[in-house]
Amino acid sequence: MPSNKSAPLGRLARMALYRALLHSADHPDPAMRLFALGINHHTAPLAVREQIAFDVARLPAALHDLLQAQKVREAAILSTCNRTELYFSAEEPQAAIDWLAKYHDLPERQIQPYLYTHPQRNAIRHMFRVASGLDSMVLGEPQILGQMKQAARAAEEAGALGSVLNRLFQRTFSVAKEVRTTTAIGANIVSMAAAAVHLSARIFDDLQKQAVLFIGAGEMIQLCASHFGGQQPRRITVANRTLERGLALAERFGGDAMRLDEIASRLHEYDIIVSCTASPLPVLGLGAVERALKQRRHRPMVMVDLAVPRDIEAEVGRLNDVFLYTLDDLGQIVEQGLESRHAAVIEAEAIIDNRVDSFLHWMDAREVVPTIRALRDTAETTRQMELEHAMRALARGDDPAVVLEALSHGLSNKLLHAPTQALNQAAGADRAELARIISRLYNLPSDN
Image (cartoon, rainbow, N blue to C red):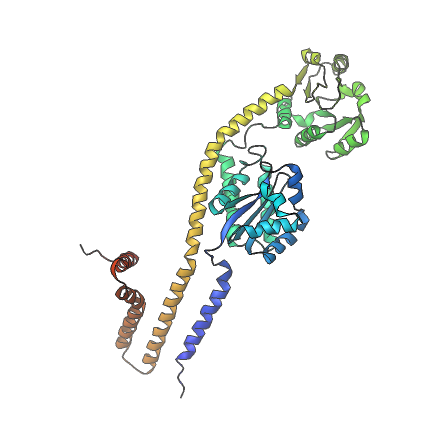
């Protein structure tokens, strides 16, 4: 009759193999390291940055191409107007550099001077700093955190986000939140547009009840309109030399538009006026403002002049019911806000350095996971073998006490065989070091 001793072992071997295959994707590879690769507003002009920007709609395809074509295990791409960065796990970064140049059909030498590459610790630290607003054009700005979250979602949906990067992104968001809530890095005013809203709110308690007139439709006015629009004022109007352009901006905020030559007759309708044109002469003179105040029965007006040369005659600032602010006035507020944020950088950097060490510790711990699993699998196989011997002995009618004694001896002998054999085969300093390690592992009592 053929023995069935080999059958259980075959089943156990198959189970161990299945477990190994199931968890192989999560096993850390010592050769793989994290990298952050890219360009930003510090290293490259806009003309270069726009050449390697990624269309959001094409990110999944780009990530799939990166993982398929190169030696990259997992990856995510962050692409904004100020930066394009690749976060990935690989043996070395050159594969990603080659892919980036090829994907955008550019010679590598054309982008190489502008690229930066951060390995492992520096990559983690860089991601924490970016998400916290420490690497932004405007220190502490919050938009980048949302953009990083979008990059993580895109990578996850594309199947490019592995266990390490997924954990790193989650830790990145947590660190950014901690930095923003425990330091002043995101506090205070650091833009002209925000300063204009701040000064207006000092005069009018409730901006939702006010009517706002923007004169011009350039970049600065667009920024101001976005900031004021967030306060949901009662009315927004854009006055511009080209009516169509003014209307296009106004409609974004549910407003209306007028021509520049209509301003004087309608000025009294507005509580807040923000002006920034390229006109070489003032757009608003003293007489027009005096007439508007008379029609308003001297209800106060806030005027913000962001133009150089000025759009609003300086004499307007002498009127009792007008609060006129210029670039210099807003600049002082912005400078104070920047000073406060810079003071918070030291605190933020300390938090980030501590969290980098914590994440690296997690990564180091992952490297022993395969060893722990193998150790447990070996012990489980040994246990199953001895248990099967005992079950067969009991089935034969052997004394249970004798069977249990044999089971315990068998387990201890097999589990101690490998370390005992290693000690016997070692010599000199190796034997002493191995003895020290085994004593520590098994918590053995010292000789003294």
